[in-house]
Amino acid sequence: MKYTRRKVLLIFIIAIAALYISLPSAIPISINVPPIVVNETLYKSRFDRELLLGLDLVGGSRLTFEADTAQMDSVKREEALASLKNVIERRVNLFGVSEANVLLSRFEGKDRIMVELPGVSDTKKAISVVGQTAQLSFAEVNEETLVPTNLTGADLKSAQVTYDQVSGKPVVSIEFTADGSKKFSELTEKNIGKVIPIILDNQVISAPVVNEKITQGSAQISGGFTLEQARELSVQLNAGALPIPVKLVEERTIGATLGTAAVDQSVKAGVVGIICVFLFMLIAYGRLGIIANVALIIFALISLALYKIIPIVVTLPGITGFLLSVGMAVDSNILIFERFKEEKQKGLSTSNALEVAFGRAWNSIRDANVATLVAAFVLANPLDWSFLNTSGPVRGFAYTLALGIAISLFTGIFVSRNLLRLFIKK
Image (cartoon, rainbow, N blue to C red):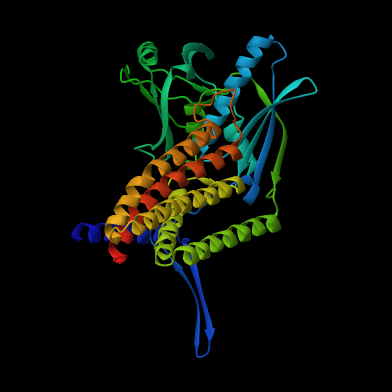
């Protein structure tokens, strides 16, 4: 019993922590009952991250680029387009936009790539990150003429934003691969006392003077950047250069595709459904149902907290995945409670009947959840297999469903079991 109490205490600590994380960063408090009038806003001092909402709920930007594949045969064209899509997806992820859609299409004989960015209203900023080529190269100066060298962005290992120790301004520190470090060492050795222009997309952005041979395989790009410019450059360099030229043919800021009314109705339907589940469990199982409902509340709090921590972009399909996982969580409790009734009818004590019920229901719970997890894995397609789904909203559904199942196993087996052990005596 002592260990059970400790486990229950741990459960409520987890629930309180999840509740704190789930609450919005700003909590308005309005009381207008004279003589008590309060209009204040409470702010959480820590963890003020908000839920990320998808394009269908919050709107965003849609960019359409046209790829230059006219001179390629069919095989090279397919490879180049696949590489282009991968690079843009990496840039979007580094840019900090989740649940983005990157789609290839063909329009009037021309290849296009459409990028949907939820929550991004500044299309200019999005274009600068997603669509720029970011081709980096180093040059030598020969009689006031720039001479390209064999040191390029292909030799780059990583790039990150740092601050110049003298000026304190943002710069981009780059580190070369082993082969690139050798090239850089040879380049600096030949150009001591001279400048080495650093060229990005055919523009000289920095021309540092070489004071000595540099063997560490690292360098610093400075160009009077703001912090945001330095960050965007590091994103482009880390993601790599676009494999083929692209040009922007359409940009637009779009509203939520579902509309406010549709979203409100969907949320209301979900709330009504959960309330019905609560009432059913209470009516059908009495005290056991109360424990199941408490576990379900903890399930919801942990889910919402993890959506913020991971983070997971919430779309309407994602909400559907959450609601389906609620059903899976309740299903586990129903299997356990029905088995508990059977064991009680055999004359077992309450505590023994509970233990036997959990043990014998586990195989069914495990198999049902594993089967659903397999389906979620196929829909999420984390390995990006070309013959499976690559749609962002469908993946969002799969992620929330899989996460919900994992949490439901915790609440159904650990939370419910220990609450029942402590509070159900007879």
